[in-house]
Amino acid sequence: MIGGTIYARGSLRAHKLATAYAKGTGAFHQVMPIKRGPPHAFYGVRDDKMLTVFNDVCASGESWIYIDNGYFSPNRDGLRLYSIEVKAMRHEGPIESTTYGRQRWERSEYAQITPWRTGGFYTLIAMQSPYWYEKHGLDWREWLAQAKADSLEYTGLKAVVRHK
Image (cartoon, rainbow, N blue to C red; front, side, top):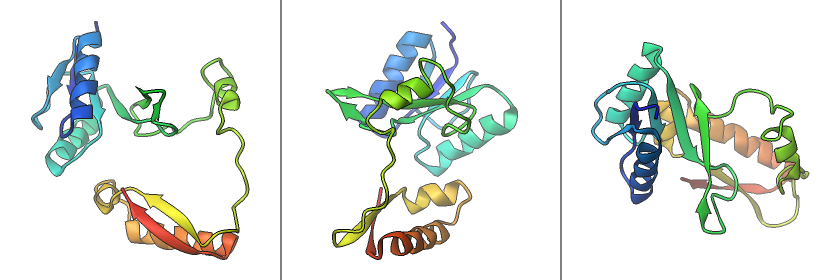
């Protein structure tokens, strides 16, 4: 058992994940936005108060992990897939040539990146909520303008936007 704290709130999925994490690690499931002991595990950061705790933990230098929904097929065969990173919100390094790295990626259905499609009526841009961009110090309007420009350049199609 490693103990520590799992910060998760706001949905049934968050409650289930935190309960399983706490059971497996001995961590305390912290629902209130109050910093507790390390190592810290976060399943999303859903509001300003929990963001404050997250930022405090990051600034403290203490160990933390970030858990989010899996990038691909988040509900395959009735099982939820998750992305888990240590001291990062998403994977920031190379895919290592190990059983759990490059070889695993190459076996997946997502390994082949296909060219932009130019048929159809529009390009769908699926993006995080404006809240997410703002709370991570990013200008969502700038990101969206660039995504629309890229879409038009590569496909010649208008862009339709879907916020999370």
